[in-house]
Image (cartoon, rainbow, N blue to C red; front, side, top):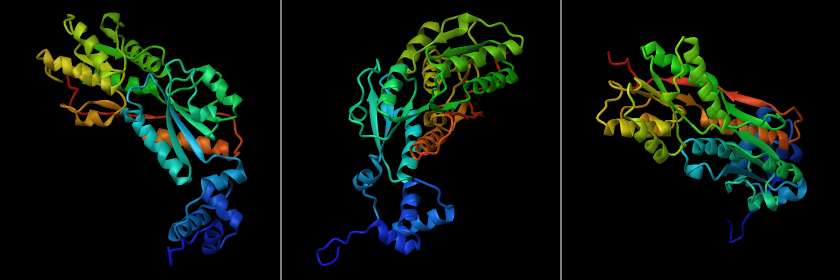
Length: 342
């Protein structure tokens, strides 16, 4: 502000300072075409030095793009962007979006996935990152409106949509093998809803690892719980008296594991001395639990970043076949697992 007059900084000023053409500066800032990394860094530095902020509306008039990206969760995901898993995915999407000078809009899709969010109806977004299970109807509606879609934590059989998924099967195998190596042979499993591919894959990993170890699958110690803490707690409350009780329990998510831990402690059992507990996802609460949970780590933030990159590649016309990126998992051993009591 000088003498009460606001000085407007334009893309031309950025180009001049970075010693590049206006078109190169525009491509570098909007990630809308090939630009050397060195040049991109110089343009970005110049923009920061003179406090240049892209005008999304003006950019939209030229490119016919809104400058907005949608991040959508189904109503079945409790907590929205406060959900311990999807909040980290959202952070990754947000970071990548911000770096490209786009705006990120969050919305919830109703339980039946029929009532489209307003931002989709009015086409106020260029693309959507949808986390969790999505209906075929919703995908078709996006296609009709020519809105690009990338899926996170879900893939469709047709394979015509980019997706970022977790290596759920092998993650579950790692955990069951860890429990077997400790000496456990009666390993219970708290599985998630079997209408979700990710939870089906974790269940299959559990069963396959037992089979390879020569152990019989026992449906009496496999219990299904919803993904919220209260439901998992109630399920465990009904099963806690089963005899013989498992010496170890592996749950399909950390939240479900924490619910199991609560009822186990209330029954006067010790973790891991009496029962070993293991989870999946490595949410923040897993490390903070007492005792800290042994779990399977998933790079949730990286999932979000990769999904956003895929979306921007599509928006910028980098033509390629839709692909599925698989995020590898890591076994994190903490204090909630130990050898079975003799």
